[in-house]
Length: 379
Image 1 (cartoon, rainbow, N blue to C red):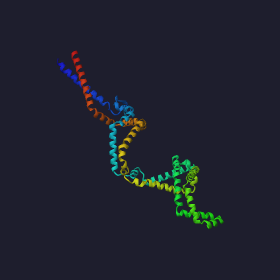
Image 2 (image 1 turned 45 degrees about the horizontal axis):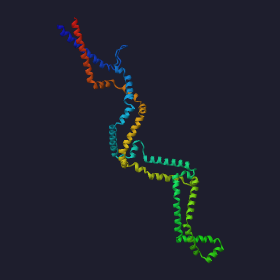
Image 3 (image 1 turned 90 degrees about the horizontal axis):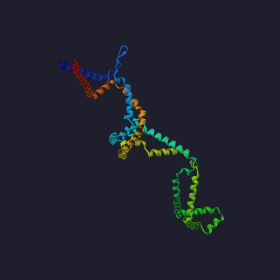
Image 4 (image 1 turned 120 degrees about the vertical axis):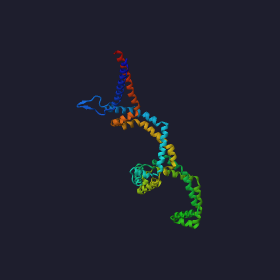
């Protein structure tokens, strides 16, 4: 009977020690030893540990897992379309943008940070070259073209629609001029110049009528001519006919003798006055966008995020492929310190690993107790 109280506890203790130590050793052998051990030329079994031995395979499998199941176009889309993520991102951008604007940074300083010195001069040079290039391009394109083909149809229609009004203005100016004393004097001079070359006719007119009386008689006739509806129709017809002739003429007919240097100087000057680069580049960005700040923050940022999210979702597969995420993960895991990896795993799962050790001891103790009972009964 006394053997029960000695053999069974002894077997329980031995079994618990063996079970606990076995589980503890198995856990340690996941990581250790870190390198292959040799006795002479003979490799010690179970060296290196499981994870060091399979680190390359583990890294490859984790890389495939990340790309195939974790970082996927679907997961990226879910994250980008998450309302809380979009709201937090917008708030973050607003905060960063406002903080950056408060610094009073100017466009010139921004360009200097990107390595562009004297941005005003360089940008003006670029604009001038662009104007010259565009000028030459348009000149070569339209120089041999009829003016009617160059002008837009809507502009041509508008010009022709203005002809009746122009005819009325011409007639009105004529009426005002010929009804004035200056106009009357002009009529007299015209009559005099016309009749002087007619010899005796000029002498007869001076003898019987006189220049002044003849001018007085011609003045109302000219006014009646100008008031006549046929005069207006004739003038409109002449202007329209001249307009159609002008449409058929090529631009080069009007371009001969043009000083191109003056034209280019005028275009560059107008462009500089229209968009004064120096003034814009030396003003704080905050001041430049102040009129549009609310629209930029309330509308521009959400639209930008939506566009960026849509683009990233559509191109995420290609982006992941180009960045070679799988290779990056694989290489990083292969280079990861085994000591550090062991520390991380033990730190995270310390309680569970201790419980596994205790479980081994418990199972070993139960097995030892059963063995002790069997030994005692059969002895």
